[in-house]
Length: 344
Image 1: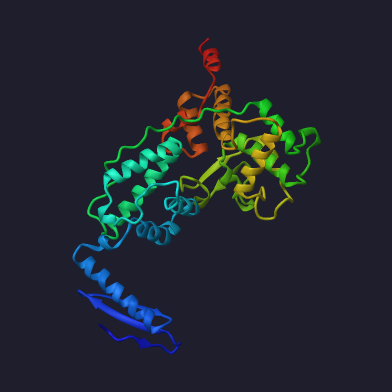
Image 2: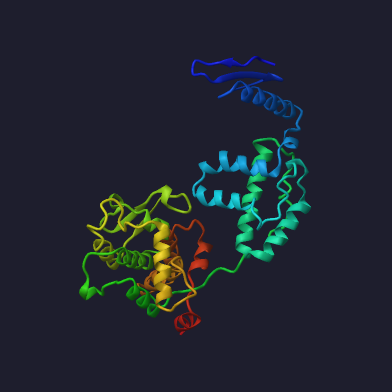
C-alpha cells in the first residue's frame, strides 16, 4: 500500500491504485487517511470483481443518491425530504440489507405496507423515486445487475381531481384576504392582498402557485408574461397570454416589490390562502384547484368567441403548457348541465 504524505497545510494525502484504477484523498490525520485507504481498496477490489454492491446497504445507496444525484434535479428539496423519510419509522424498508440482497418480495411488502398508511398517489411517487434510485445504482454505480423494482406492480392511478372553485367561494376567500372590489381598487397594502391578486391572476391564466410566486417584473410584457424553464413544472419555458382583467390585477401590484410581481414565496402563498379559506368556513379545495377552475372558465370563454373546437383545444394546451392534448381532459371539468345546454 502507498505511504501517506503530509502536506504543507498539515493534512495527510494518500494515493492508491487497485486493478489499474487510481484514487486519492486528503484528510486531517494520518490515521484517518490510512483507514480511508484500506476501506477504499476493498471497494475498488469489489468493483473490479463485480461485487461492489455487496459492500453497500440500501441505506448507503439512499444516502449517496441524496448527496450526489438529487441536488442536480429540479425540486431536489422535496426529493431530499422523501429520501430521508424512507429511512424513518413510517417505512419498512430493509435499510441494513446489502443492495445485492434486496428482493422483489422486500419491495412488495414495503409497497403493501405503504398503501395502508398513505394515498395511492403518495405511494406511486414513492415507488417512482425508489425505482429511480435502484436504477441509478444499477446503471451508474454497478452495484446491482438488475433492478428489483422493475417487476413490482404499481397501484392504480388515483382519480383526477375535478374540484372547481365556485364564484361564491372565491368571493368569500377574497374577503378574508382583505381584497378590495374594483370600485375601491388601489395598489396592494398587505401580503394578504397580494395573495388575493395572485389568486385572481391564477384564475385568469391557469398559472401554478410556483410560477406566479417566481414571476419577476422583467418578464411581464404588455399582453403576456414569460415563464422561464426554471419556473415551470415541465421544465419548458412558455408565454402565458393575459386577459384585460389579468393585466389590471398585475398593474395593481406595482410598487409592492421591486423584483417579484407578487413578492410572496410559494409556501407563504399556499399557507395564507389555506388560512383564509378556513376563516371563511370553507374546505375541499386548494390553491392548485384554481388551475382546474381556470381551464374550465377559459375554455368556456373560447367557446363564446365561436372558435373552431380544434383551435380552442390547441390554444388551451398552449396557455397551460400541456404537451399532449389528452391532458386537457384532466383540467377541463365542465358540469353536465353545461354540456347539455350546448347540445340544445
